[in-house]
Image (cartoon, rainbow, N blue to C red; front, side, top):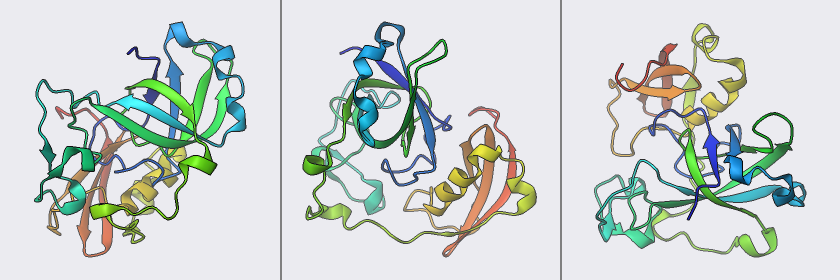
Length: 228
């Protein structure tokens, strides 16, 4: 298998990335093809589809050995389930599958063609192995059951984001950041209202606390990398 493209997002680290694709539609990303695959002919007809599948690699979860069970965050990280009953990144083959909305295709520029997508749940620079169109008449199954994952969680946190701190965030990323925080990026087993969490996003480091159903942004500063 060869890497055909890479996804560029506002996530320099894994913390805070949505647990599934499509949860935060405001998240923008770019799919940039490797030089050998920058062919407009390869995308002929793709503009007619509203959504696409990305088949990609959990590039930071590659391991020599695998475990038949994992701890899904949905169950609080305390219960083991079969790896093939989960979407956990620690798999025999670290392959991910995401459905994203195709916003457009940019054919100009030195990197073109580039796909503009929304709703991606990937780390910046994630390798892509393949792209396929989403077909609603076969890919959508509203009657499907969700197993232990249960129904889609409709509850969202109330986000208190002081305007003075919001102004530090790049304007293009403000809507996405607020929607991302409302999804509650904390591990499901952490509920300490005094704990200060840090979410790196779009070049800034957002510090917040969560008390009950309210998330309050406390600080916003320049992101300086994991070693900071």
